[in-house]
Image (cartoon, rainbow, N blue to C red; front, side, top):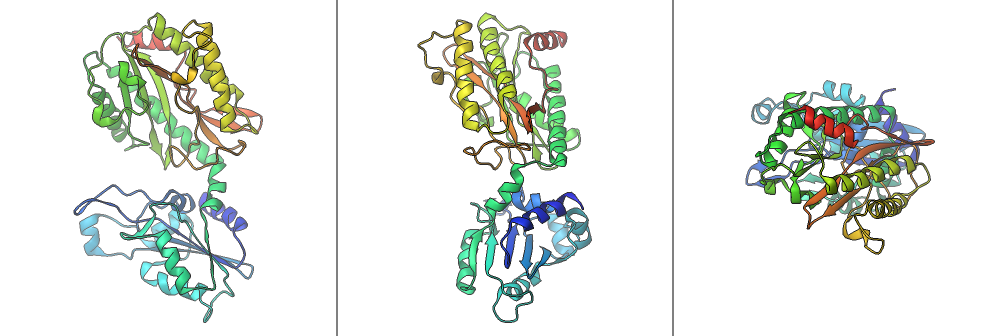
Length: 420
């Protein structure tokens, strides 16, 4: 059994009996007039099918001891392809998704009606209809799945309408071996992209030149897409949590710290890495102390993370560790409030989304992938340091998936000086 079939079978196991479930890929979103944003399929649809094509529907029927799976796609249209590019054939969709029953979208309404209506029901008595009712999933430009759910409730009042989102989240929280490997590949690609940035870094460049180079490198090495908008922040800009691309116009100066927050996507899985480097090749005394405090916290939280702890527990431990480190290194006094200098959370879930699905209030379990990203931001001194790794929760603790990306002070200074 393939990966996508296995995921759907696990979902079937958790779904209520006598139910029909619909998961939509979504439709393109207009940016202006006839210009559309680049399309990304609903991640839940992609997770269950491996298909990125818009205007597609997955239907799962669980009734009378049977499990039926159907996929609906736009029918081949030669004229439309000449305008908008290739579309999947039904055979190609089967090869990707492992779904044998692939039909034209033109048959969707009638097949849904045959599945759920009281009269002429082809499966037995269907009691529940489940849809992914996440915000912004559109099945038409002016119709979301939430609106569609109300329409279906009016049309089929005997059905209990439910949200399938929580069922899928339970599966996505625990990564399979394949998912871990794909994320590791995204991390490895990100590592080579960072190395390229450092090799081509020159004093006097602008932040956006490096940001653009990272995107270019990915596109010329396997056509890799960005996991999110690249953050390149020099000097005081490193104290801004998400330094936007439109403002990345500062000149990189000798003596600056350079903060990267970036990642590539591989087969849908997003790396999320932060590193901080001294442009001159050497940290000055204050920069070194701040970096050491963040690095020690980063390594401690990776070692600390294990099943049974919550992300809130990691955050509490990070606050305590950063405070102790800053006092030890005489960066702060005992009475200083660490929250003035550390203003974000130490962790979030990672996967098909950079900030992936998950419940921060539940204990971590083996198979979760999280980030570990402590930081310190001294605005007046113009010093911002963040070190972020991607970490797999294992049965006995955790494993850092991004250990290939150097972060020790001695390694960074050696690497930065060697490139000159």
